[in-house]
Amino acid sequence: REFEAECVWGYIGWQLPNISHLRLGFYTADIFAPEPTQQRDVLPVLRLLQDLGPDVVTPEASGPDTHYKVLQAVTAALQQYSDENKEKEITVWGYRNVWFRFEPHEVSTIIPVSLQTISTLNHMFLNSFESQRNAEFPAYEIEGPFCAMSQRVQVQQYDMIETCLGYEWFHKHDSPLIRATRGLVFLREMTVSQLLAESRALRQQT
Image 1 (cartoon, helix red, strand yellow):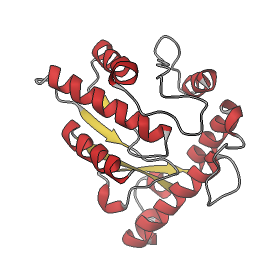
Image 2 (cartoon, rainbow, N blue to C red; image 1 turned 90 degrees about the vertical axis):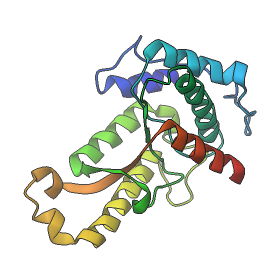
Image 3 (cartoon, one colour; image 1 turned 90 degrees about the horizontal axis):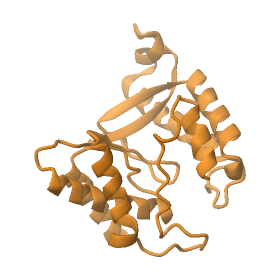
């Protein structure tokens, strides 16, 4: 998986040592991974934040098992980092994957996706994530790789917004980028305290 992730980042020019594989202890081969702990899982993330001093952090805002546990570890580390650096303003861009989606009213940023971008993402996924061509835990909505599910979600999100704004808003827009849009990515901008509240709410549901 680490090599596969490096291949994906390589598509956009990133390479080692700018990619960090933290190998958090809760991430095991077991079907149900153990809960993250402060010493084993939160501290490595906190040290990375201290080393990098980021202005923007983009955790996945939901997901099954390991995804959810990464969110809990990142949230705890961000809270500690924010407490240590009260003068620093940190922006959180939350995203959701194929398992959970934002509703339009929940997001602050909508990113247009063209057919060319979708094609590039599919090519990148299928040529990088060999182990994910046949997903171990496939999405119930589609038979196939996760990139096909991701494409479906982006197109569904586009359909929702097109219904609200109308066909002509997209297809007769002044911008060629908007006219070429066939999918949308939803992001939610948050503060660290808002992420903490979101993470706690998810924790209460599990």
